[in-house]
Length: 554
Image 1 (tube, rainbow, N blue to C red):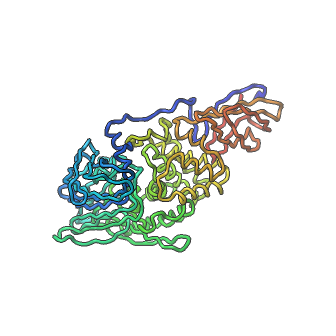
Image 2 (spheres, helix red, strand yellow):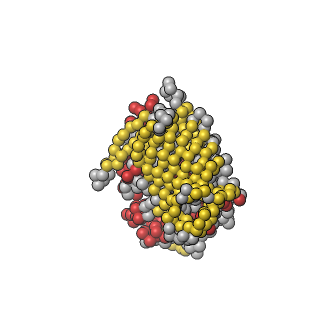
Image 3 (cartoon, rainbow, N blue to C red):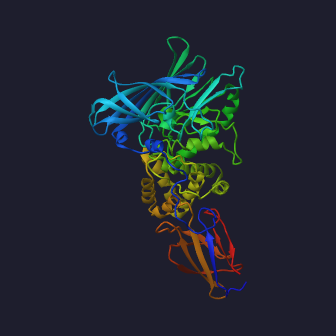
């Protein structure tokens, strides 16, 4: 090795290794239509009212694959108005819209309904209207990604009863029931009444209030009550001849949480054993995020014919009782993590879905750390690193019906949070900030800047430049460095960040050759430090913080 030679090397670093220099942020991976704008934007016809309660009542007919029912929408007028927007897919027929027993005029623009009230809705007052509707709801071709109803049969029993479920995130809850279909407005609570043929069980969100036969004796009406705010896309139905398993989880303060598992009859014994990991998971999440946020409604796993979905207090489970190589069931851990991020803390716009998915994917790594240690958690993160694409910003365009198809909100998102944890450099502060976020912002709509400011304040570290880089730009920053020989044992290390975000200043733990590990704090300006080294001259980044890459200077 000739140490008199000067080398200028580029180390592509932070969350993982990349090639290429920073480029301008890409706006969006998809075009937007008029329908997307109607669904995604907040116009006066939507901002004029705030939903406080939904009372959804419907019948499901497995034979005809049709549904029919009503939804009573209780709302508070934010300002005086006579025209408002409610959403329901165009293939669903409206029979009537009434207020105080009188019909209301309305027009339809695709999947949007524009209602004109008979009198002015005064600001501050609580009003109700009832929409009666019916139709054959959209069928999910690839649930849960392609939203809609799933009509199947359970072939594990001799009876082969109907097996009906629904998942609609992205596509929209208005594919099967009328509502204000925008993430920014959740009801404070909700009642769900569903009538199904005798012999079938209907599991929905919230707490089971009653089950009773209808007057004609042909159906059973199942009534569920959601005591908390709920995303429209989280509202679900699960219908088949379910077997019920009851259990409890004891929190650290001794309080008991009801655990209810609804599974196919042939899977009862398997489920009793497999679902034991739920208690370990709830203990882990209680440590990092606080107590389960929907305590009055209980926690449910409901077996479905599709992989899974984070339906609030009624997690859809379809992973066939499979544990991954790290010893846990991914669907149980991930979808339950959404009870904190997505269901309790909810974003206001589809563009900010990173809030749901990045934190929840990070919760998987924390579960591994909780059960197996930090080194195993880093190994788990490394299995996800290869899935990162870096094609689009994680923060999407606001104000349209933007269905985030890029998986970076999951895998790049969790690596972003892991990186920021190490940028904070103090696990006590980091985990205290994370728990404060989930407890102080519990059951609320949250925004990107709000989360960044909150975590910055709690950790006492300005995290805005880091979040800006990873959320608003598709590419990663580049750490440029130079190594110059001073004498036989000392080198000067010069370094800087090349990044899109102003003020990007991620600290890096490095060593040269076999020297000591040390923290450098690059900025956009060149900085220089003297390092002692022996052996091969190469820069190493601490594995377990971000990634490892060695570059040898000839």
